[in-house]
Length: 156
Image (cartoon, rainbow, N blue to C red):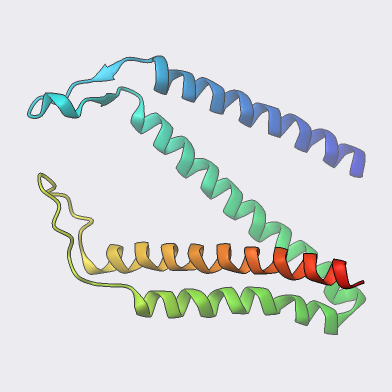
């Protein structure tokens, strides 16, 4: 079973690499799209393709992570229920950080010259702030974990 899992993940990884290389090639070498009102703001013609690829990869990773978490939690729950419930601590902490980050987010509309879109509203502004603050927290937690791990290893 693990050999099959390894083989499937191996081919999926290289298929994703191939798609990324093709899309990046289109992005960098696919020409430019001119902006009719402001010519100096021209951008690559396949910017949308790159953005959709990133959205798709992000969605794929979120779904794969949730499925892996559920499967691993279910297996751990059978073997050692106390340890499985302790493993939920990280998820609960992340949810708490996201709630606090949502509360700390600003609802003030941004002043964006030339932008008339519909995303400059309080919901999307708070959502963006929530993701940024959560990202900052997670980066800080990773740095602290690396430092703590190094100190623990040095003391052992």
